[in-house]
Amino acid sequence: MLTFYDRFVDLCKEHNISQVIALEKVGMSSGNLSYYKKGKLPKHKSLEGLAELFNVPINYLTGETDIKNEPDDPEIAELRRILANVDEEGKQKILEDARALLAEQRKEV
Image (cartoon, rainbow, N blue to C red; front, side, top):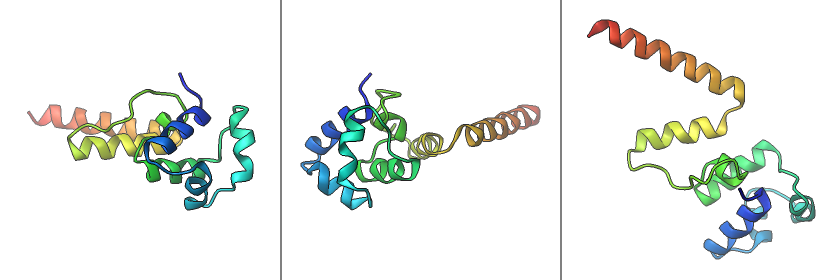
């Protein structure tokens, strides 16, 4: 898996934007590039901004997954974006709610 820095560099090239400009667009300092190169991650809020800028999920940016593109179904894409951008507690709450909804709907059938 690639690191955040590797993904960031690749996405900048792909979008034909300099690293400095990309960081500035989301309110980040280019002075931190050396930290990212050493394996550090930006704060979650910064990752959210970059994910939105490049239209990729946060877990793609951080190298946790190689799935970059969203599915064709916009609702599934939205669910993936939500899951990629909430903390672990939020993911667990969403999963609990989804499981409860599924169980309820199965009873109705």
